[in-house]
Length: 429
Image (cartoon, rainbow, N blue to C red):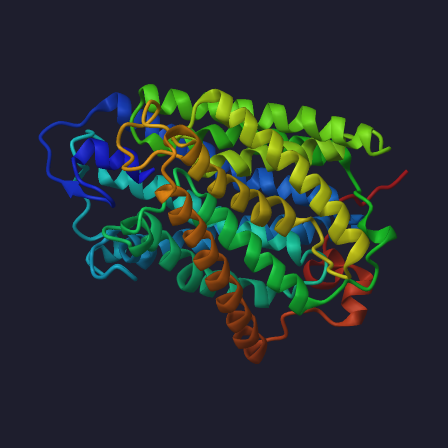
């Protein structure tokens, strides 16, 4: 993302605002449309998750995702954007833009895009990141605790990492780490946070029969909405409407498409059956993996990334279920954590100046230079470790305020009735 901003502004790495005489209506419209597409991903994720849980937890799963729009969105407008995109130190931004003060008349470099449009776009990224974590702890999370956790996680995990990778003089960016649209910032943070959350929450009381998806069409609908919204997620990260956005758009589609086909073939070759559930999951894996690389790699490389991630994540999900007691309800770690790692690392193999001339170092397979590969490996380790430790601390802290997990009676009844007094379907046949 910020490689493109560097191209616009003539500075690297990081973000810069400027007073420019004229707004570019085309670029502005593009970014606002992409912001709306990324917002659509959160309800898409809600449907995707809600179709995968048991029938008695559909409403709670939907609400846990939807409420993040309000909680994290308002925090982003108040302090989040300022802490990420204002210049204070390499570790965290300052409070220059608190409540968006001072941004009203500024544009993003000389792109002609109002800074407020960029605020809206980035806000949608901040929203969906904690929403992803709900999949790891579904069917047993206390809603009150979730409200507190999502707010704290957004400020204490997402915001610092976003500043390190995308902010002015962020230290991971200075060291050469590249993340076009959120592989490090969104998926690795959420995926590894989901891992430690699932470990701390423990297994569900009914983690076998109850884990059978209640509504496969809802899962497919959610995956379709996510795929559609992901074009805004990745192509919108080019900021302007041009060749880089076009590359990111096609790479996004190609990676998801090849991941779907490879997943089905993997299932066939390992004695399984081609399932709509697997197809939906594979699309998400392909999208996650291409996210950090979307604006840096060729279309062929994008297909290689999607295929490799599909095989690795398919086998990882099977291994985790068969060989561990981890109850990561909806496979958040395998899809987002592992998928994000694969995408970030393979960016270090395939990044090309032919696609994005602003990058300082090309991938190892392109130029023989290992600088970018090692920078991204270092970034992966740092972000994963930080997410694991901070999420552990946050869950411990929240548990001092209110229990993070519902009691046995409420879990047995289902969160829909016990916490919300609602049911997804009142009339059953």
